[in-house]
Length: 460
Image 1: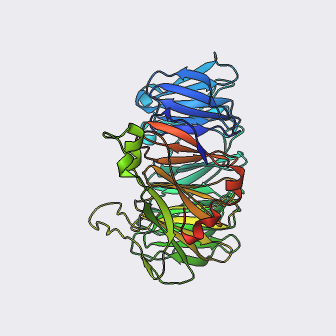
Image 2: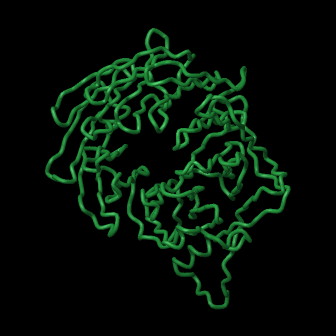
């Protein structure tokens, strides 16, 4: 495993292009585009204010920079660096901006969610969509880019509108039987739309493309309900993470629950492998140290390396007692994601914050638990194979695959707290994002086959 040098970064804004050729990063009001292979700067663009959001077009020819405080969007072209586009929403303000799947239209959501403005880069025409709802996930495109589903709120009721992306004509409009619609998401095959209610009302609704209600699911009542939702890439399963600390899997045939995964603080099954992170202090001969130590040596002394060790059962995981009298308590399944082949599901229970649970979807059982010394901030699956990257806000990155797991210290002078992750589409490299810097982690071919085959006995 090799690491690049670190580069400056602002706001964790670092994105690989969809074709995998470029890497865009932001430093205050500057947009830097690099070649992925050489990391040489190809283009440097200067925006009118500090950039708060960036997004590549689907064909990797354009990149959008949003400056919400100014109500501005600037678009840059990689093929024609002298061409640029500026969209000013004026007094209407701006709270969100995204590309349409064709990469030639931009959807801007104005302040207070009064409307969505659709700007065409080709014809310079403008269309308006009224009544978008301010919710967690109110806009979703089908994977093939043909349809847009939009959550709406009008006359104190929730609705969903489905638009054809080619001409932005309304295809279907229907109301949802929800108290306060929180999110919508298309299945990867584009055939089913999932809609879920507020956490105060446990309800998941599944609609067909023509607006027919296929099924409604409710696990329990009179308690905090849904916290996270994820489709499997195969569209066969819908995983629902709840505040009761369980994940429920719905199947795509009957839309009934096929199993539920609990997340207890005690792992009593002797067949379940539990990896615990443990410190691995470097062996340093004190007689050969100079004082004061060089900067690089001081960094090595202050930041201890770590390794995974197999815990012997039964195992008790570190728990966090949620504050019951505050909104959004830290409890329940806050993060869940399927591997690219749909074989595994990774989850995090927010009141067991240091642990990542990996479930075998084929056998519908717990496969492994990874417990760390610090709370897990983020995890992301390799887009090509079942390999999971994890970060905890420390200067290490953790990798797991069915072959084993490993903890890797990010090299360099000083501390490099990894706050975010971003895989390259090939799975050959991984961007590690810190508050003010980023670097690339390159995984070799041998590492791609098995991340760390020797880790089952706890040796890093």
